Amino acid sequence: MSMVSVSKPVRRVVVAVLLASLAIPAYSWLKLAVYGARLAAMPPPASLPMPLPGLKGRDLADTWQAPRAPRRRHEGIDIFADRGTPVYATTEGIVFSRGQNALGGNVVWVYGPGGQRHYYAHLERFADVAGGDRVRAGTLLGFVGNTGNARTTPAHLHYGVYGKSGAVNPYPLLTTDGASDGLSSYNNAHAEQRRH
Ligand SMILES: [Zn+2]
Image (cartoon, rainbow, N blue to C red; front, side):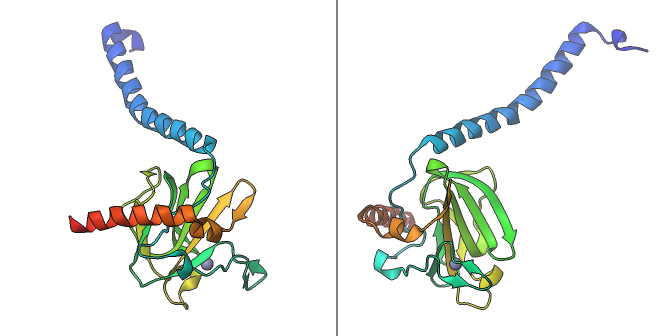
């Protein structure tokens, strides 16, 4: 017995099927990689819409770099809201992680414009998103909770933005004029969704 006993046309079909089965997922990964490269080339946003519905800039408190025991500084913003409040992506991008860690509890990471990574933590539960998913600004990611090291505090979203040189403060991005514009158009879209 040897490979020679398999006829040439049969071998061709087998090779074609194998290549096709590899090529289909490879193609979607290639598309994702191309989109990732496009995101990396975009400028980082100068303002962001609110990740939670119905909030204004004045509702937020700037807790950037507030001390956190032991020897940690707060690398983000805490936005307090009722448990179960929906959490929306602030940018388009790619979900590159959806999982658990000790500090953040249930967390979602989104790779966004300018190569920034957006961190949504302490979620009560996840929406229907998974690693590799493409999202838009306003895509539902999960729901506010107090998982991780927030279990002794009221429910809130911990939101962090990480650029090429480390964490950046989300507060000014969420409270600029551009952000409130984004918020109102976003809220209108959201109200539209609720009517359906
Ligand atoms: Zn926090």
